[in-house]
Image 1 (tube, one colour):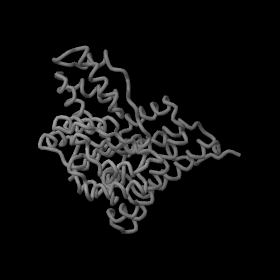
Image 2 (tube, one colour):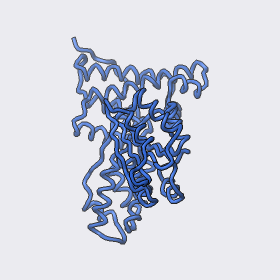
Image 3 (cartoon, rainbow, N blue to C red):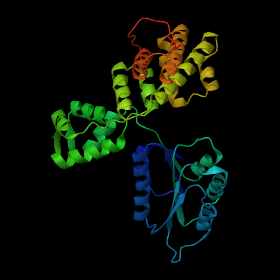
Image 4 (cartoon, one colour):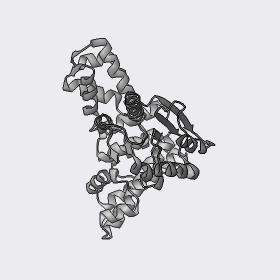
Length: 342
């Protein structure tokens, strides 16, 4: 069974399944989903909790031994397995064996970073119980999440207060949760205005490089300029930003070339192994400019990479800003030839 995180509480009130596998890269949502399973297990009489940290070198026989053993006093057990980073071949087999024959007196809770949902061991855990995949919230979903969280703490936020808070904490749900708790303590229940947020919330926005690239592809020039400034202020290497931009632009140029040759766009995206969640974003980006524009951007990205590496004349962050805005649909300057160092 596959559930969305927001469906978990309703499901848990109906009883527990033998296995819960929670996977993803968004730490706050993953932690809260796992905590909900732990709380439900306590409430439903699973009085013993066995914790295993499956890091490199972990002995997976411990999991199978726990599955085969009985509690000393016949108590029902929660087996709390935390995998970091991935289970490997031996771990995958152990998890598959567990899922094929889970014990009657235990619930297995597995937490792990993002994994391939098509893997055999993942499908086995899903068949034996519940799979919850945690995805980072995108910009469009963040205000609704913030509003729901604020209302859950008794606050009645004005729309501009929600928008301001979303802008301040974008890319960092943990910071968002902490700021909401602070607002609840400072103001108590009742109406929350934008001025209240301005006075209490630090600018906690954190942007990862890949989210930055997706924002550029979405055409949000104003936001992407601020994100680039934030990345620079946080000490992110310009080479990493250049690599991420160049990789995306070259991939889109290649997709655009295949589509221009008459290949169906869905087939081309499958060939390029585009994730389902990113396909709408790439389709929109491809429609905004013809093949020639993508080839020009790819050439420009190559020049920026040379600037960043010191092989061409220019200021790395200025060049990155120009390329980023161009990708988002804003041309600061007319086309110009690349200038190479001697």
